Each structure stands twice: as structure tokens, then as C-alpha cells.
Length: 324
Ligand SMILES: Nc1nc2c(c(=O)[nH]1)N[C@H]1C(S)=C(S)[C@@H](COP(=O)(O)O)O[C@H]1N2
Ligand SMILES: [Mo]
Image 1 (spheres, protein in one colour):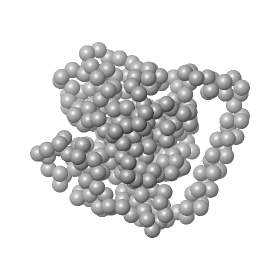
Image 2 (cartoon, protein in one colour):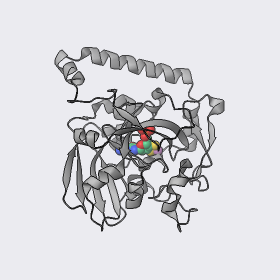
Image 3 (cartoon, protein in one colour):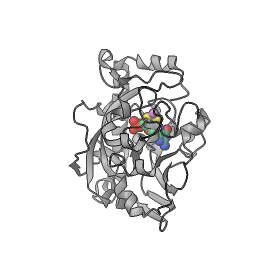
Image 4 (spheres, helix red, strand yellow):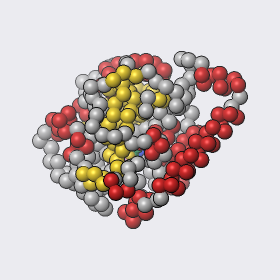
């Protein structure tokens, strides 16, 4: 994202759509060949219910009152083909190409820090902890593009209750999976200190909009979107929503966060979507809605990404002209 100069962002914005769509078709074709090449035993494991769940597997979901209802969904091929997941490369189509190597089973999430007792949760336990809800949210990247994504998950607060944090826990930190053998792109192409780390204040994490996310479009998350479990914080810039989480730490002070480490003058800890605070290198007043015809892409960016009614109370007394 953030190593791109504005001129490069513009040039990617004008990539001809045909070229892009054809590329996606090609990739889907490649996936088809891959599935055909799988052995019968492997195929049996994929379809055996309750055993292994892979990207594209249907999830049983319920409707949610916390869904955004008034906007068209960004088409699946853009949600899963235009990604930021720097472990797998810095170009938007790198994650879709490279994240297949991410081993999403077995998978555990370790909970530690200021909790009654450290615990390890298996991904299949997490999937069954609460009913999975369809939650359509606007998704606004700090790079000034946006999407509308039908995520699947339940409020992070439901999980945090199971973690039994102590009253001294004021922040929560999320750490992404990192294996430099399969996620070497990020190490080669950036100066990021891995693993990817993000965090929220405890009351932000407990807000019902903060989603522990397992799927999109009613299906298990594709690897490039942060399988098998990620966070989605819809009123904050996308980089606050860590992917492929393996560790959750409850802590006393503000945890270090990846983009703040990289450039603390450009990326703050809070990073609420805010059209009145420009990025030092570009305006945040508008955004480019991915997947729409070129002439219809430009949208006005909304304070708190349009979720102010639900979250503005969290920032009472804070100076919203600063985003740190
Ligand atoms: N581990 C990890 N999480 C990450 C990122 C990343 O590079 N690595 N990129 C962030 C950014 S900048 C955005 S905009 C969103 C993108 O999510 P999406 O690809 O599902 O749209 O993921 C966020 N989470
Ligand atoms: Mo982003």
C-alpha cells in the first residue's frame, strides 16, 4: 500500500478492466486444474463434513441486525482478487496468486497476557462458538479505495468473553501467522518487522461491530482474505483488520502495530476513517469504489466510514483532527 507513490496508485486505477477480468478467469481455470489433480483421498477429506473446511466451502449463516443494507456488494472476483496481504507480496494480485501456500488446517489461536488463564482455541471450536452471521460492511483502505463486503462471523466481544480477560487488560493485540518459508515476499519487498501486529483498545474490541471473521459471500474465507480467521473493524482503515490470526494478547498499554512501526507520521494507532484528516501524501475526502464502472467509482468518504452512530461515543473528548 504504502510504499506506492500516488502516481503508481493512479496507474493501477486505470488498468483496463478486460485485462483484469481475464486474469481472474485464468486463475480460476488454474484452480480447477489443481482440484482435478488432487488425489481421491485428499478430495474425500475436503468434502467430509465436519472434518476439514477449505476456502469456498459453504458456511451455515444467520441474518444480522448489524448489517449494512443500502449498497451494492463488490463482486466476489474483486473482493478476492484485489487484496492487501503483504506477507504474500505488495501487488494487489499477489495475495490471490501466492496465499494458496498458507496452511489453514490444523489452526489454533493462542490467547495470552492479562487473562485468567492462557488458552488455545482450535479453529473448529471457534467456528462453532456462536452462530455465524452475514454482515455486509463497507471496507475502506487508507489508500483511498473501498469495497462493500458480505463478511461472515460473529462479534469479537463474544469470543473475548470466553477469554476471561482481567480488569487490568486495556488493549488487545492481534498477531498474524508468519512463516518466512512461505511468506517470503513481504520480507523481500518491504522493511516490515514480522509478524503483522495490530491492536484495539478494549472498548473498541468489545463494540459489537468488531467482527471475528471466518468467511465472505457465505463461504469459508479464501486464503488471500485472511483465512481461516481474521478481524474486521469497519469504521477503521483496513490495515487495522489483521488477517490469519494465530495469537491474541490482552495487554495493559497500547501494543505496537505494523504500519505505525513502519511510518508513525502516516499511520496512527486509532486510524478511524476520517475524511477531514488527509494522509500526508493524498486526500481522504473521497474513495474509489472497486468493481464499479470507472465513471461511477468516486464516492464521498464518510466519517467513521458511516458507522458513527455505533462508534462515535468511543472517541468522546478526543481530538478528531488528529488520527493518532
Ligand atoms: N496479516 C496482514 N493483515 C492485513 C494486511 C497485511 O498485509 N497482512 N493488510 C491490511 C490492509 S492494508 C487491508 S486494506 C486489509 C485488506 O483486506 P482484504 O484483502 O480482505 O480486502 O487487510 C489488512 N490486514
Ligand atoms: Mo489497507
